[in-house]
Amino acid sequence: MTDVRDHLISTVLVANRGEIACRIFRTCRELGIRTVAVHSDADENALHARVADVTVRLPGSTPTETYLRGELIVKAAVAAGADAVHPGYGFLSENADFARAVLDAGLVWIGPPPEAIEAMASKTRAKQLMGIAPLEQVTEADLPVLVKAAAGGGGRGMRVVRQLADLKAELTAARAEATSAFGDGEVFVEPYVEGGRHIEVQILADTHGTVWALGTRDCSLQRRHQKVIEESPAPGLPEQLAEELSELAVRAARAVAYEGAGTVEFLVSADNKAHFLEMNTRLQVEHPVTEAVFGIDLVALQLRVAEGEPLESEPPRARGHAIEARLYAEDPATDWTPQTGTLHRLAVPDGVRLDTGYTDGDDIGVHYDPMLAKLVAHAPTRAEALRKLAGALERTTIHGPITNRALLVNSLRHKEFTTAHMDTGFYDRHLPDLTQPTPDPHAPLAAALADTHGRSRFAAGWRNVPSQPQVKRYAMGDTECEVQYRHTREGLTADGVRVVHTDARLVVLEVDGVRRKFEVARYGDDQVYVNASALTALPRFPDPAAQLAPGSLLAPMPGTVVRVAEGLAVGAQVTAGEPLLWLEAMKMEHKITAPVTGKLTALNAVPGQQVQLASLLAVVQPT
Image (cartoon, rainbow, N blue to C red; front, side, top):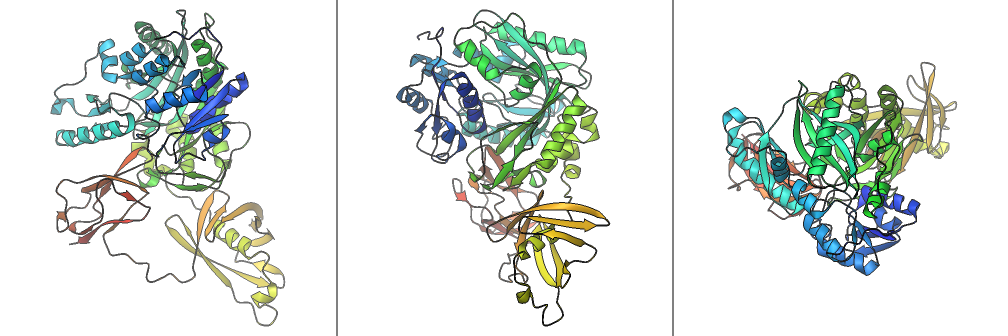
């Protein structure tokens, strides 16, 4: 293996996609470093492929065919003339064999030594190194427990088990998910700490023995064990405990002769006892909050370390507070179902940092993580950072698939979060309240008025006969509504509302003396966006043919059927809530359950089958 450090890097290939690839490319451009992107067929027109100086195709669309093929990526780096490889996060970022293959090809690996990855990337080996043994034989007394993938991260291959009878099935599911996500099906079991906070320490180490501990981060707000909101420093943490965690993190890094950026993660119980979870030997999704607080560029520092340059003896001083929110194309109200389709518009107000892998007009597919973007706010105090981020999210324009934007805003303003009393069970307790729809009652009227702009008044008929009300129907989420307005000699009128201005893009309404502006955008024949409200224009009279048999199960998103319940066949008796099959889409596995108790009269799904949104999967005839 050749040591290729101690020279300036000229060309970096990023062995990743989406937001993190774009973020690394941004720093490379600032440093004058040439960039190389790899892309799957599904990502041929993705933003990261468009902004790179050079691109190399990885044939196929799934991660297993493309971004998890280390030999193809190394070959691409050599072919493109790269002299360094940055793994980003996820995929092969914690794969020691991939790191060795990069080094064996004579390239600079922008990450820790393969030996350090091997020691820490496997969570089982990391725990052994820290003197912690996983549970071998689980008993009732051990419950609840957490089944966890030994490799990778991002919540893949993780299951909470509360009943011993469920353990075998959850182990099987976790192995399958881990194999699909990381190419490694090893899982283990550890105690599950109820009501704990997820606290982590960012470390950065050079090749000269210096290790920085860059403060704490709180990542307690999670769905499916994947972080949603992160902040630095962790609020309300006793100073002594914060120092203890930093010391443990530095000790873990020194124990494996670590180099580069990494994160040591802990679960802190309600009585402020720290439990070591793992060390992620890579850059984390939430690294921007640390960058904001310390005024640094972690990617630039990774490059500097990879070039053999020393760090300063001490890190910069921390200033202020930073909070990051992950904007996902998903519906939190329906079990976090991923959403696909065209992102027509994404616009974020000034004053916050936006990291994204998408721009207007990009398609959001089924093969990869549903994260659209990360928004980061930095301010002198936590309260100011919270207000800043919540306000920016509220003003963000998103036209396209359903997102978790409203959930993020509601979470940032929830009393339990604003007072820093949250834990990893936050969404288990509060999700129904946080996802209650709050439709704008005037959005349908604004949509209807914008739609009528420019139409001939003569066509409306008011010149010859008394004007009849115009009627339009819209769907807002699961709710249908009907609006009426009239064309008169005085203009457009609607009951209780004064129409101040209307055109195809802007409607101004006055209600009880207060004027409100409604920005309207239309895509296709039926998609309408009014401020933050998404509406679907409906025909005035519903199509009677568009009816489904009671008990029909439709695919909640496009995806792949990964499993069907053992022994399930047409004619079987099933119970409401009983798992029937599992779909995988956008790096998540979704359980499809029987809607009612009854007889299975149709089953249109087999493992490996690709299904589209609203495809009929099965029918359960109620009994």
